[in-house]
Image 1 (tube, rainbow, N blue to C red):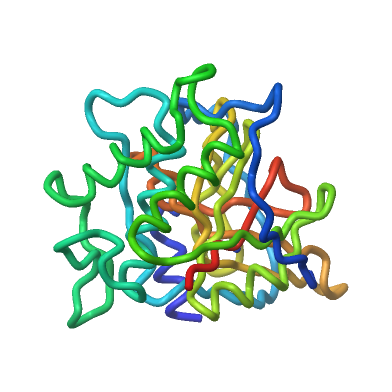
Image 2 (cartoon, rainbow, N blue to C red):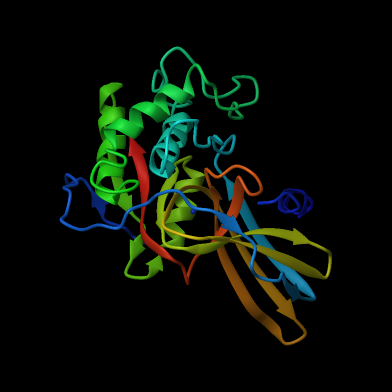
Length: 268
């Protein structure tokens, strides 16, 4: 629990079907573009006598990339580049000439103008960003990421973890433990940082004001007890927002959720 408390103090993914079909553009799709983070809500305080917390992230975490100068509505390319950077640890040459991580520790490097910026630019083109409308559609984002990964000599498929409005949290936990990330297509929503204070947790929200794409790379399950027993269980995915300060890393609450789609990314 000391490790959990230390982590949470920092501002902070079903038996599923494997989707191996081609993603074809539709006449009308939601568009994921630039968004702003705002803090319109007061903090929430959860008081308890006992708490059980299960927190885990992928080995080394996840790369933290953000939009580069000159690119607008680029949350799709940024998320795609984070996924490429994440898997570069396991599939060499996804980012040519560069290791996305520190070999000694396994933690991910900061973005590089020389190496990661070209990946974002390449994905910006392959995802057809701002071609049909602002930003990217789900199908263009997935197709563009697939095209890039294929060009580096690897195959990829997407495994849905969303059934109707329900996230298969068990599948997300398994993905985390197997060092796989999840691409999240979200509607306007809240993300959170969580701080443990001993007998209560402080849940600090930030609001994402529009459709946005993020990368899930961990999970957190919190069970709260009082004198009467278990009174609340919260489920979160740990996400890289792609937005930089103030919350590059956050918790995304699921069940209920505000997702349009969510896929484990499998590369081979």
